[in-house]
Image (cartoon, rainbow, N blue to C red):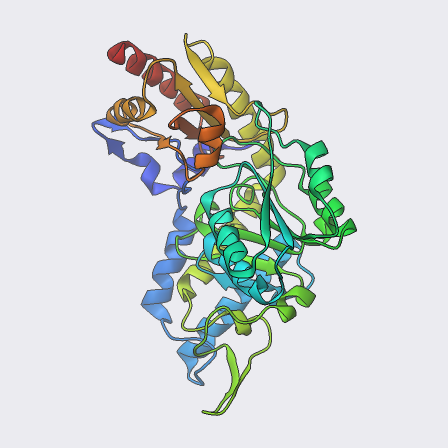
Length: 404
């Protein structure tokens, strides 16, 4: 049983007011809040050992390097990667996906097929469209139904010996659907295709096991996991990371440079050109420590209860429709009220101290599928409460009354 009051004490921002009202923060799918324990680590880095890593013999550089590499090991352990060098530090999920998309430019040919699900974030659509344009590969879409579930029988039909890559999010940021990624991965491997899973929305709620999933690539961002912005990770199987060329050239990713030829560093540094977000990487590791101390099973159970309660209460509002009603979903409710624009609802909620997201959520194909301009999205984290859900429901009801 989580001690929510104790947990909330760790998050300074939850004590503030917005427009004279206590903040109810329900935009966690965009960015989660940061506990004091992680903030302290960031401050400590700049106070006490701010130095570049891997390049200095002096004490500060050695200390920063050690803590940065310990953070990589924490990420490896959390995601159960086989080797620490299979964890690449990136600026976030988008950067991670682009590393893979760029790398496959030399591995695809005209007529090869790449599959992407219909419920992807733009960051898991646009890089593959660009890849298809560069290589002549064909992009095919795994469709979904009105509940927001992938049509797996169509996925089976799309797979063939032409399929080289499959891309899918673990959890939809717009609908909350938990996709059957183990089945997707296993079926792709039968035809020899590699699989990248966008884990940005799943990582705060599910402890994904890279070896159990047997996934080829998995991406996540620290800022959705109680960590800082501007840092994330790409997991890649060693064999695949060795096949891909570097994404950027510069310092750190080299073994030897002459004007005639450059040789590249071994993993993971081959993909980590330039000075990284050092304190961000260290803080990412501490954020994982924080969440693991609470426990992901306890987090999942608590958040599921919040989701069920919020769904039940919101549906009592006449004219409210929820988009994304998959049997297997988590922590996201996207909704509209008949006749009202989501932006107008969101603006009123903000005046009442309730922070939600409105719009297409960087998932325009989903909105086109439902024939809507966007939704109001409330997304939950383990520090949210049923009282905050009640405040949300009351605020939505007030917004409805004011706009009608």
